[in-house]
Length: 106
Image (cartoon, rainbow, N blue to C red):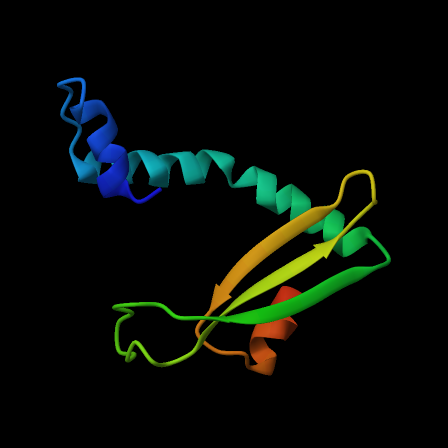
């Protein structure tokens, strides 16, 4: 949910939380949760089968790019069927360097 909508929820109860405060909370939460995708990546790289694919996404107001320019969301999935992992990665292009970095160590 976008931050402006998250900001509106407590406002209905008379509580004002600035949007930049919400953004800072999200950044801090992301830092605290970073070990989780790191562990998922290790699990993906040690499993014998992994699927990797990309899909086109349109990013509005991306610096130095018109809104009509293509960007890509990459997904890697694999791991045991009882505990599959899926990792998403944004890239501004679909060059071989992106794939090399995503599959490094596999």
